[in-house]
Length: 81
Image (cartoon, rainbow, N blue to C red; front, side, top):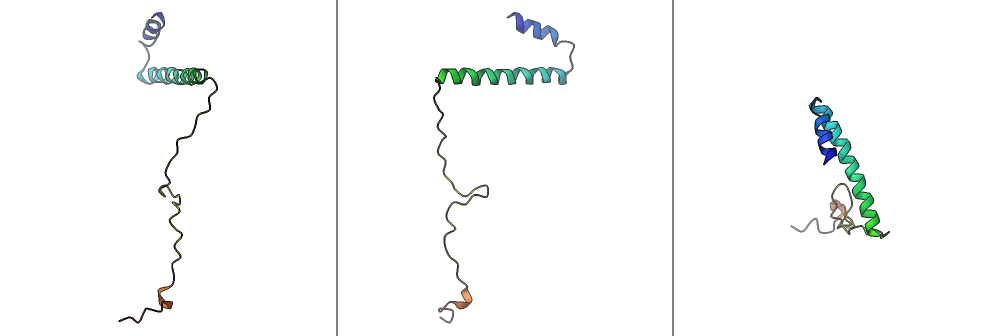
């Protein structure tokens, strides 16, 4: 394509960092275009969030902390042995 050749010739005298910046800009543009195409192809469908299982990771409570711990000093079975 003409645009590919144009970009290749335009980037010949650039430093690696400058080429990386151009690449990042083009990748961002591609991402935006893909989002637009996906939205139009979906026809307004709402995406459903995937269900996840809460296992208590990342500081979240998994709902397993409901056990009430009692003080062992007041336990009536302390003198068993």
